[in-house]
Image (cartoon, rainbow over all chains, first blue to last red; front, side, top):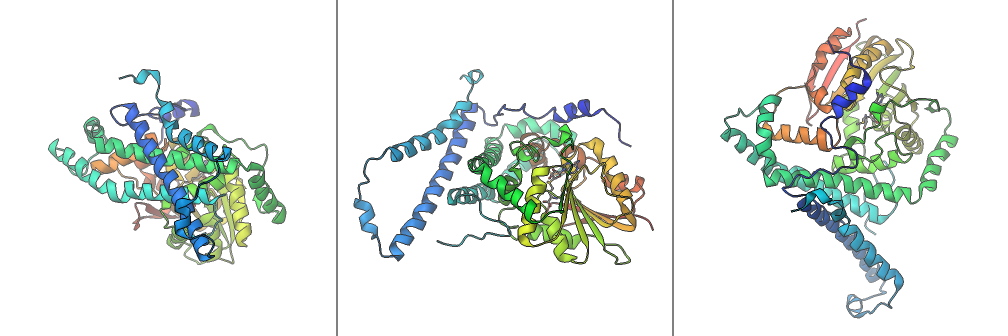
Length: 107
Length: 354
Ligand SMILES: C[S@@+](CC[C@H](N)C(=O)[O-])C[C@H]1O[C@@H](n2cnc3c(N)ncnc32)[C@H](O)[C@@H]1O
């Protein structure tokens, strides 16, 4: 009942509709829109990661009587390299999706 | 710290990964449960205005597709679905890879602690067709030693929190057909991935010897570690469903849960014939998979084709369009029954004549 094909040509047939490896399709009218939407999704993820951690931390500090919420408002962290690096990483991860724009996608 | 449900598996490496997966689960939940019904309404209207029936075949949908794809909602939905998958896999994979030696060591340690339960030949050749990045998981099932870890956490997003205690796998096991004579000594789970049905089978049939078979060693190694940690005694074997090493007439029951829509069409027949061979007379087969049907509402076609093309399910369309029950009949099975489930999946049950 099933026609016999050799495996290679069969795979080629079955792969025909798929994007080539490494090639990112766009669904919205312009690839930039796809990239921006992805950036928003990334941003939301980063935001939740932070909120979740901050909630855990503040609740621990409060329950152990270590830090009152008002103290957090007025605290100035010493300028540290690590802090700057974290910000650079955040911006890179957030804006990385824009790199997938290629020459062919000019307005 | 508030307790997150660890399910039957450990947490991902860092709190950050758990938070990210939780976020991605919400993104998918939004896209699938809240946004998709609205999109389905819009797509249905486009179809009605074009004079199409509510349920249509692939050719009819093909005529509509260009207009449907021009809808900004459809385009945005596809972007969110694809990016959600890609971003979830990428972060998980990066996190595990950052401590690769440790995670690989845990797999090896389980193999030393519980020997004789993971069976593979280092010379085994994985066919190219099993190397696709199914569901966009980078490297697919076979390409990364840590794929089992990544797969587990990634599929938790897919199951949207409904499977943290293997509830879905448990219900597959409950839905299985068993031999009429009640004799269940050996059970085989084909395409077992990380062994969630296999362990559920052993828990349900403690007297039986349970085997899980899969082409992907990374999945099997994770399955073995997980079963070992759970204290559930299951055998895992690397092999191809179309040419198994298991002897003739050696199993009382066989399960294949969402395997067939992920294998190439030219393997359907050899797989079914090999299952028939390893089942003993009177043995029972249960296949749980996407429905074999040719007509769907336009919105379902949109999603199905999106999955096939953009969620890397290259073989799924062929299985959908295939008369699987007829193939079971041709291979010699009898008492072939299709049962709908309370999910989108279909159960197909068959028995090898006595
Ligand atoms: C969607 S997963 C199955 C899910 C699994 N049954 C569960 O309980 O969650 C498909 C599995 O089939 C395996 N597979 C694909 N082709 C195969 C073949 N020809 N023989 C055996 N296993 C195969 C893949 O490696 C993958 O682990």
